[in-house]
Length: 288
Image 1 (cartoon, rainbow, N blue to C red):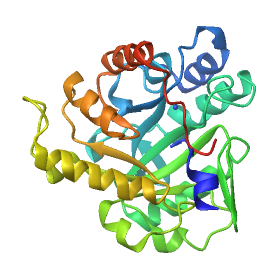
Image 2: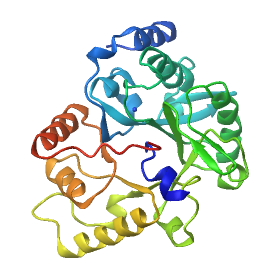
Image 3: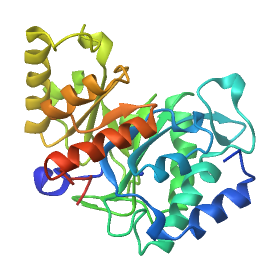
Image 4: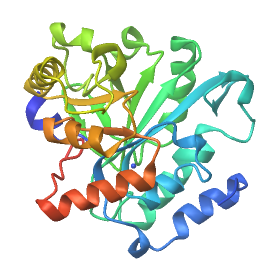
């Protein structure tokens, strides 16, 4: 069941607008204007761009990251606690416009595209924040990938929780509208991919290479071992903290890393579209 269901899971997604305008514009834009979906592109700290979510979608990204804090019962999007603003909620910036986009595009964020990953990086207390997040996600069940007892039902958006996670609280749940972003130390226990479909790691804690010169043999062999073990368990792999350089993107892409982490949306889009001209692009998303 693990490989059959999750071998392709998505990893499975102007100025600041008012909440109503943001959601309205996200859904009203014609799908014909959307770029080709890029299943390998991950928008790191997406909310720091001028137009959160919309910039990522305009560049075809299929994996989008948002940091959240639980503040007075609200899930507020920001990297630092002192930068939260009451109007920047997870619902307003991400869940509402993504649902509206899926409504307009026939049930997917990109028409006929893969499930888009919303990677929610929890910055506040794990269990308390998850309780609030679980309640919020239940209101978007019509567009969310869900786990039910012994199967995964893929939908327009796949929520994966990173950062401060609450695995003991989440593990027994069914239905469950979110999954866990695992770490390298999770691999030896080989947990279900229906619970941990993605492994993420800090590049600079594992490897020394920062894109200057060729990838050293030691790092190359280590990377190959991690990829082989991760893919052997039916999971996808992402590294954060990678230098935003085409040389690094190329090395990771060639090695088989599934999600390429970047803050340079335009640069990544040009890079991946250039790759597709060299060879047919790999279009495996989460849950397809």
